[in-house]
Amino acid sequence: MRKVVLWLGLVIILAAVNSLIIGKQHTLANGRVMLLDLAPRDPRSLLQGDYMALRYRLTQAIESITASSTDVDGDAVVRLDKNQVAEFVRLHNTNEPLHEGDYLLHYRMRGGAVKIATDAFFFQEGQAATYNNARYGRFRVSTKGEAVLTGVCDADFQWLSQPATTPAQTVSCQDEKI
Image (cartoon, rainbow, N blue to C red; front, top):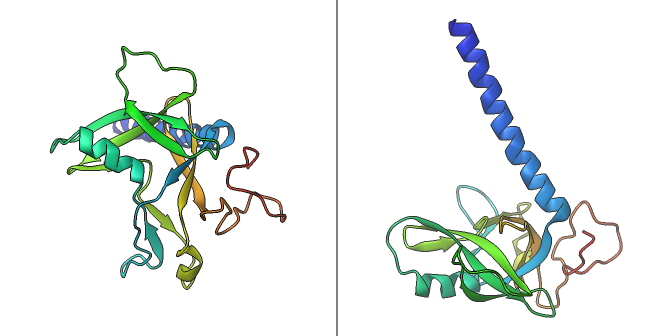
């Protein structure tokens, strides 16, 4: 009986992990491209090596509205400008429908700070100078608002490091095909 419970628990854990992976892969393949304007960032961690601590200007608008010390999960309604940069519209009320051109972006409030997807972008050690000009975080966002960071871009919407999945030619961060 003990072995059955152990194997059943293992199967459940593996199924849950695989469903999360499949969901992220679906978002990467089919999600809408959305750029988030970066707030000041810190490109160094003594314990983790080179990485960029990401903060987004959009989170400042959410924090100003939801001044709460409790942990909260929610969705922001954003609208994309002509460059696919997300602009905060309002917090989403589940009873209120989305308007044409509105998209959801899921956030988590922890310790009074709003977090969207990830708050760190890791890169190869010694490459910090490459990322000093980072201006936008590039995401793929599902219809439910779940975001996956795919890279960072400069002010001219050019990749600061081209993703491994893109062809060798120069591709803009705004390109939907990546």
